[in-house]
Image (cartoon, rainbow, N blue to C red; front, side, top):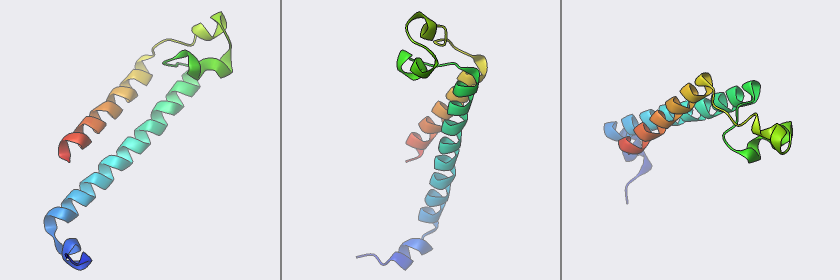
Length: 87
């Protein structure tokens, strides 16, 4: 069985752990940024998300797209694709 100190001394493992930590941190930050933009601009992707702002026809006006929200969402998707390809 491999000792933990041997794994920590491995250069490739340390590089992988560092990059994975950076990318996961970016993904978590971008998720928070997406939620912030969606809530402050009242832009939602599905009807269940906008229930707090109204019901029926009133809720449908919040089902729209916003350029700033979409930009953050695309960055988050790009980061998740990059993470999946690096593993």
